[in-house]
Image (cartoon, rainbow, N blue to C red; front, side, top):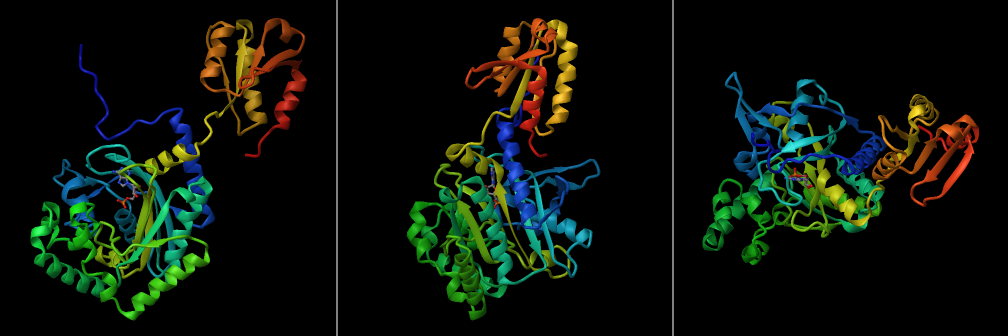
Length: 423
Ligand code: AMP
């Protein structure tokens, strides 16, 4: 017997009933992006490896350890996208979408990182990201933060998440802080763990991200970016915080929040939850005014975020699950009425376009048909039996309560039409 082939570790299949929750989540997300007037952009899953090396940064975990990179038949190095921002910027430059104009974009789809799989951390996972190009002012930061906050509200998750926010300042301030960090950590070299020693010269900011409890005190006493920041950057951050308060958005300033990637400046932010265990971050983002130029475009300010759909959905299902039943009607019929059942299902779908209607195909007893209706969590079963049908009668049963009624077919049709939803 040949060996069964299984999915790659950390990459998931998704099917009913979970897929119903995914679809409901995605519908809410898409509606939210529309309400905030962002347009969708779709781009490839595979890109040149150089794109991520130049944007995400050579010394980040993603580029150092996590990319799915391969050489294709032409000898070109390609990578399955580990994130969307760099790809979005590449596409915008290539198509002249952000030259001297404001562009508000969103994308949704799979990302790939070769991390150690565990609950909430996968090797293929889904993100929805938004990017706001062409405006430097503090209110764009607030607008994108408000969008994700709106999503949390729509999902009923606002009280289960915390928004942390920080500023990394302008690039020269960031550089001065970086130099101070290197000097500080050089002085305390013996207290650094192996990961931090490796990062010392390549990406010292990332040391601040360390979750190692033994380094907690060392990190708390490390130079703070705020001490290297000019008045302009401080004022900008103040304006962001004030506007968030004005919109009723709660936040915590966390001076240690740096985000892992190289391209951020000024505002960075992250939402996390204490309901999901170790993988607690549900959405993160920030301002990246230098990235477009770094990738060969004209200098263009930008701010954006990406949320992890698996984690958002896990949180939702934990605290306020989506409804499961999406099948409104299941038609059960005697064998002699199979043609009528097909026709009726078609008519009922026309009459109520938003409803899902299934009719049993094939030979099976009424009992077996009903079993499937229950398995599919149908709300109502409609019975077409030969005797009743001959008299223009049907029987229908509410599968949740077990209540059963008989009615003329005309009455039933009117009832169905009356409950018709708007598309
Ligand atoms: P990042 O691009 O790392 O800031 O990720 C943005 C969001 O994507 C995070 O807040 C997570 O919700 C989600 N995410 C990142 N990496 C993974 C992963 N390996 N598995 C599942 N979700 C992830």
